[in-house]
Image (cartoon, rainbow, N blue to C red):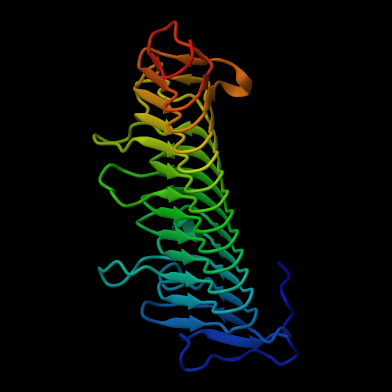
Length: 326
């Protein structure tokens, strides 16, 4: 995304509505370049314009130099750059908020000083690009309507949603503890591409022909760990994952294609821990990478589901294979 150069006039003092330490400079696009060098405190708001704006929430010290208030890009193709976004409010959890509003926005929220993202990031309508560092503490990321691209570091106890449109979601890791009953990773409606380095919670492709790739699954890290689950949901989905249930210290894992003619590829199922692969409705293909056989271990289940399915499996080590041709 191109950033318009500022016009000749020097930066001016922020209007009374802006927090202290914020300045505004007109841009040739008709928008403004806002720099808040001391952060945006709780209960304060920074508003852009209906044009293409640049909004920066920068440095200061580690106590005050972050976003705990609200930044609204409003209309236009905005660029929003934030060093930190925290939930902070005198003992209350008041999340900082970045809302790109309408337009093709570019939102970048760093985890400066090892402070993970703890607020809400909303792309709004438009083809948005959202990039963050590590995310934690009941944060919330939603691309909104449009073909969005969301890239994060490690995500813990947080919902990440693509929204309507053909979205691309890339997460280094996604982990939801057993006590968290609300967080989920969801592509939303549209033909989405979702890639996760390590999965330890629920993943939904949403309606549409989705492509989901998970490299590996999280280990058990509490007495009541949440299962790692992949649901393709409605549509002709392609799901590729690393070995599921490979050892007894990984989470219980389930992969379900949902309605539609799905392709599911995993190298092995249930070698050391309970794990299930299910094609669900319609004519599905379940196999190992590149058409090889899935090694079904003693704790594994492969279920083709309803439909005329093709299953390529090797169950000599035990386990269960059902609703698949002999």
